[in-house]
Amino acid sequence: MQALDRLTSILELVAAHGQPVGAAEVARATDLPISTIVRLMRQLSEAGLLDRAPDGARYSLGARVFAIANAGTSRVDLADAAMPAMRELGELTGETISLHVRRGNQRVCLAEVPSTHQVRRVVPPGMVQELCGTATGEVLIAGNPKTELDTAIAHARLAAGARAALNERLMEIVARGYAINDNHVENLTGISAPIRSGERTIAALTISGPTVRFDRATAERNAPALLEAVASLSKS
Image (cartoon, rainbow, N blue to C red):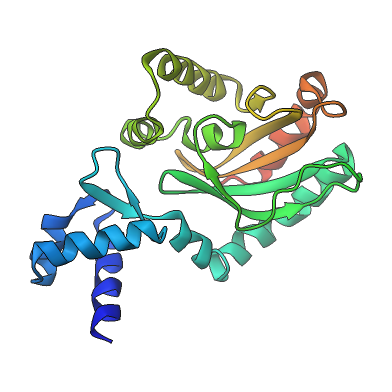
């Protein structure tokens, strides 16, 4: 049990810290040798329970922790609240509707209303993906505090040109209230909009489907319905 207690203590300390934390800080808080903490944090990172920052020295909670947690109450609460609007959008568009949240430097699907078409986009609950490079992921970071934005962009490790293009897309998302992506995933188009709580984005609601049926023009036509749905779920 000693090893389990140590691992649990590390996860609790990282969670309580609220931002990426280094092994030295965790060692001081636990009174364990730093070599032990370095080894354990590396193992937790390899297991997906911690997410290693680009500098390689600090860690935040990993997507796997949140995927496990999302199987519990918080997932049920948010998904249940969004489900009526998701079903309505599904009936309107005929495409897959999915609900996502940010977890560290990744995003996790909380709920899905699948398309009834035989050929469709599949986004199973618990699916973990990167933030940058998709409409849904970029909606989750656009408009949030600069420190969070910088962390997500740094984690993506983009070249200067790609980083500039990403920043431009993020500004466009804030300006128009949604993102459309039909370039990064072959034969797939997605449109996503933020669910807000005050000044923060807490989730993203996405419509996605095969580009042959759900192209950019079709996504644009469905933008008003999507914006109405997220507005009904957002809190001022």
